[in-house]
Amino acid sequence: MLIISRSMDYSDLLDRLSGKKVAIWTCNTCARLCNSIGGTESSERLASKLREDGVEVTKVVSTSAACLGKKVAEKKDEVLSGNPDIILCMTCDAGAFNASEFFGKEVVNPIITHGYGLLSDDNIPILMDNGRKVPVSELSQRSSPFI
Image (cartoon, rainbow, N blue to C red; front, top):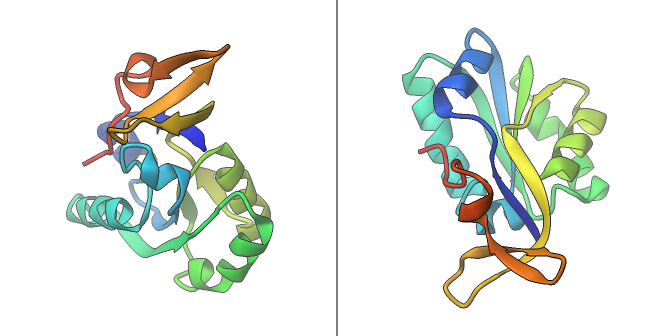
């Protein structure tokens, strides 16, 4: 599993998306499991908040694995159906790369991919760093979802 955390605050994200039509692209695997940074439910909450703050969110589309090109290609028409200006990727770096390759739109990825890890028995994302387990909370002050 990849360990990820947020890389920007909500206000910075809002500034970046203001005045643009946005499609949210998310993954229901690592991004969902890492403190619900991504995944359908978290991304729908984020879309609702963005809409309240004046951002036109055209779609929230999820896949089981944004790192797999075939999975991304299968969702291309759905993601682009609202003719978004920008794709907000609530995925790891690989998912954001695939989004830019397959969707052909500007991509914003407010997430840092730290590396490989695991979930503890308490469902806490743990990064494996040279054989040492590091809780995500030690890596970033922004490891929780946007909302």
